Image 1 (cartoon, rainbow, N blue to C red):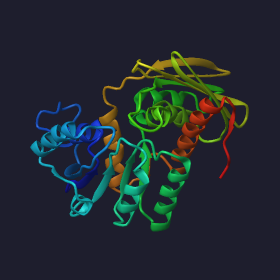
Image 2 (image 1 turned 45 degrees about the vertical axis):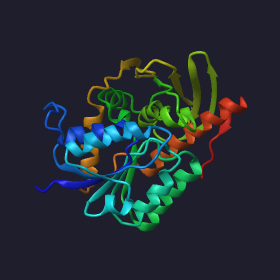
Image 3 (image 1 turned 180 degrees about the vertical axis):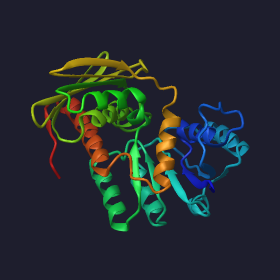
Length: 297
């Protein structure tokens, strides 16, 4: 079967490098390599998340792997079957998704969907209106331990997701890096969050999410500790699993390729919008000191 030709939009995230490594780097370990797709184009542009000299180094690496790097969107999108929006800075996601949607090609939108709920809604509205196939997700959503605990606890009374709180060079650190823990929580709890209360302290940030039916989600974002974990309990018992991140890029790439090959999106628009709503609510609650109500629309 012919490989899917993909254009990567963005060079300010390590994901552009790590995904391409697993697709076509000659020295990629066999157990990390993913078949069925090839990166052929890449668009770079200035970003507060990566200096130009560092992007130069990434460009050199991409070119060694056979990727044409350009500063022109049309050139990056020409001659490819699909697009991966790998933009570390969430604020231009809407701008570049509009450009991508005009081409009608399937799109993977790397996490988080956008910087604000309004922009995330517009992205999925444009996708629906133009019938462009798209999904957005964090790699942590597909970590084996997250999938295991979601199977074991189909409707947990309480779920806690633990992850890092990175420091964003621009915009919200919660939206930028808290997305990983929120994605894990949403994968296990599903949609239906109603209220969020969050606070920040010397360790990072913690948020309590109230769900329909009296269920509770807890998001613990730790500063300076780059480890993940997931905990659940119900009337039958409890379980905590440390999340192994060794294969998260490989596992996500497999989901992307299945989607680009015509499969159903592994994360629905309503899942991604719930994640975005929780992220923005955490941010507002930390600043205001007040509980935030999540609206149904």
